[in-house]
Image 1 (cartoon, helix red, strand yellow):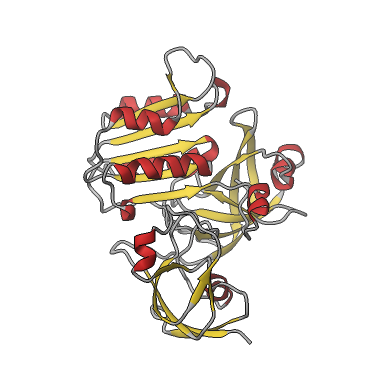
Image 2 (spheres, one colour):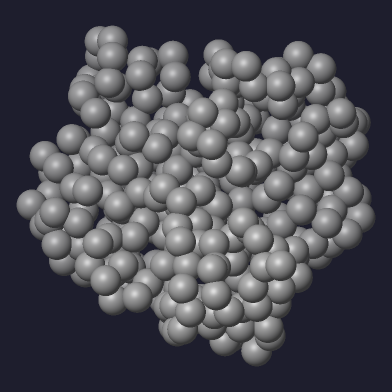
Length: 345
């Protein structure tokens, strides 16, 4: 039978089928509910349970703390209603909602960023304009492949979309991009999605931490801040395994030369790169900062990295609302966890 759930901001009551989540039913109903990972790890869909009763599947404590749960907060992506209910998603003063578009694109270029990351540029042929905020992602569909989520690495307003596609073990879509995709092919892009985007009104220090292809959304965030001449210091940490996994480091070195407020630090967890910082990337941040008063953090990359950095920031006094995180789960990782998602990033 299911339940009826009233969503305060949308001023709509929707039917949620038995066993379905509130977020899934809301998106199916065309409601612009804020969300990110859809797997209980980012907290983007955190909401007030105004009334009713729900159960929640497994989620990360970094997305919803015990104290928040005790205050009646839920994650809409994990919440299955058992009674008719009412929910209201958390709002920020700077919450931005862009029109969702379905784009027909053409592959304009495809090159190797590293041994396992392809840099893909797509020209928008139809369905635009495509407005998004730096740090958001889109659902990308290649011929014969299931849709996958990839973050935009380009600046908003540019005519060509840029994505960084990392080849994953057993990843059908990333294998297709690596082996079969060619310039001129047609690609479907839907979006934008996600709430881990640059808060342009913020004037405190920015700490951006990227791991692997998580550099894509962080690149857009940093470049957008520089484009708008934001005055605060920007600390960009890029964590990879070895020297051969680094990419765009020359680009950021040049940006740092032109913008004294940008500080770029590559960190290698393995190998002996000359002149590089070594260790885990969040440990490098911990060595450089004692506290994070007034900072905002933008995190993107492997879930283990994102969770470790989140814990560091929380332990040293950063408010959770100032931590904007995008954990890149592979399709295999999500299947193993029994979670439904389109991510293979």
